[in-house]
Length: 343
Image (cartoon, rainbow, N blue to C red; front, side):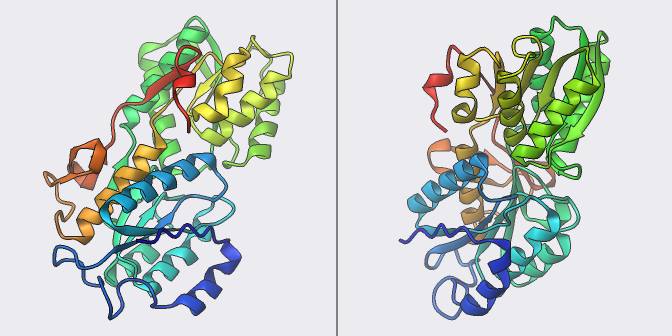
């Protein structure tokens, strides 16, 4: 079994389609029609929001581990910048190649649907992970945790760190990112219902770009001199914000939490810039997404509510309403445990 992990830029997408058209699994050799319970290796294309993002590097590594276990191949492709339009050529290429399954973290809930529908019509199984499309545009969504659970974990952390009162702001990713907007909506509700003394004064967008997120952090602190805390529900954003805070006058005065990876945040936790933050294991998320894709391709499940499948070391999972499979609850990282993790 060969693992292919080619990181392909947006500029190369059309060239890829011309040079590799119809050479992947799904041609006349092995594996095209996969409803027969599996015939040959499962060929999967993995399309994160953007390449060069440590979060997605980890999720792809998890998918590769799963593919190695069940006998499949992973091709990681994607744009350099997180935008819906930039993902479309890669979806089209996957459909033209006839891959068995496409695993996508969507940059927009609707903008990808036409391309995904065409891929589905060509026989490709569609699995979203991390950030969903509209349910009718895919077969399954692998959800890292419920929006309510993620929102509550982040609000609870910031509330604890600022004494449950004062001004806070949110530093998000792209303004149209499905998962970010769902979490922000739930955070607003959680604040209104259970934290009346915390005021959300601003929400800004760093577009999952390090420098933009760094600059937005600086602007937030200048615009809101009484700011006591920042929530950044994006791994790029929280690391950029921590980098700014760590060398500023606000270190130790303005709390920062959100969603990050231990390897990104370790130094900032140890130097006191950040007390605690949350995340699931993105490696597990990619691992689960790959096993879900295999189960669809092999015909073990159809994506209907109540379907069950085995996901290697993670055990058995059940498909919920609207084709959603839930990984689990977010985990809180702090100084006491961060060295126990490496991703």
